[in-house]
Image (cartoon, rainbow, N blue to C red; front, side):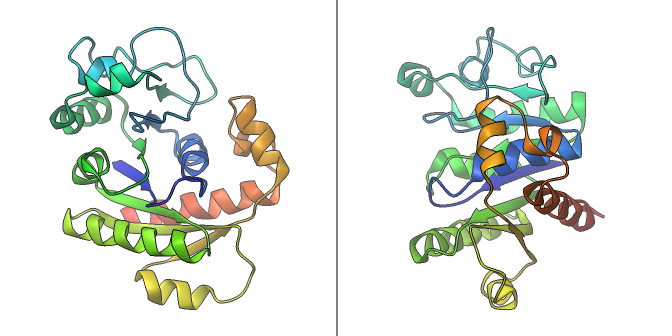
Length: 219
């Protein structure tokens, strides 16, 4: 399964959701944000190199961290050299070698988002209750539907406990709240998902509910 984790607006917790979902699903997480990479990095070939034809997707996967990851470069030069038409082939190669793949997509509605969504079997939408974030998430939902990436679940961050049903009606799919906690930030700063560093925390419980919904939708 290739799972695209997306959200129209930046800063809603998309990368954190992708990192923790990959840990729970025992998947490879691919940092697909070609211009603003946010997941842990490492020495060696990265996603920029893969999409520029300088390395294979499988050789760029790192297996020595808390989560298997295909990291992305941080340079604009590297981002400009990427061939977006190669994204689907690269993700398919990782899926063939490792099984489940979780892609941290960039914010926005450009081709760099559309390519992984087109390759994905399903998507997770990440948003907050802020009106601008919800509006952008709905646009991403429409793009995913157009590209036949089914909605597995909506991750709703920084929300109170009320009104889940209204969000589910809005998005046309299940919604799981993930509470905002300091331990999530601290774990991310150390390059470790909170579900591994603090499995007993409320945030980890939220991510487990998110992963369970993804697995349910894949059946």
